[in-house]
Length: 91
Image (cartoon, rainbow, N blue to C red; front, top):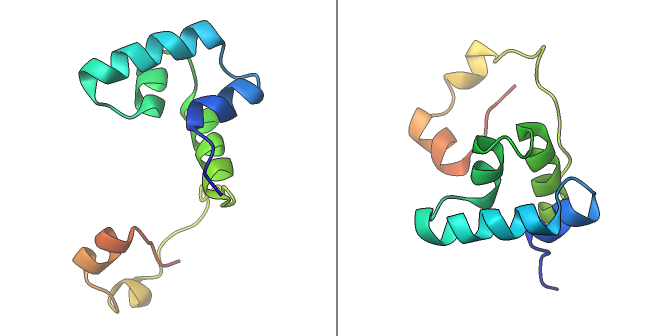
């Protein structure tokens, strides 16, 4: 099953108009930046809207970690390189 494109998800959610998507896609061709980054930088979307759309695309829940802090004993178990490569953060 093919994953939906982020622009399609944002359109269906009503977060983005077709004309704004077209404009951002044209800029993406030149800049090679991620579409979500362009949309946030231009002020078209908030970062949270892009994150939620990415969660839908990847079929992953979006969680808010505002009040969480890292357990120092867990951090000692993994090298920073390991955590960065796998894009994980132990809580």
